[in-house]
Length: 90
Image (tube, rainbow, N blue to C red; front, side, top):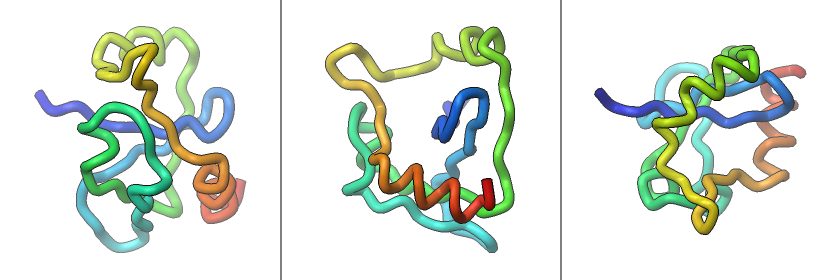
């Protein structure tokens, strides 16, 4: 099963990230991402009208699929998060 990346834009609010472009999707520039090579080298697009809410318990259950580590935490720049919040109208 393939993994799926999400960006936490604020507590409990997550944006799914897609590897392919599509209608309503905006690409995250590779310079805005840091961490595990699978995250930093892959294409990343988010939809301007899609965000998910998840409880801390749900996030904890999914955490075992996270390939980042203490030395290689997956990140997005604060500027990218600010832009995502504005594009989502949050």
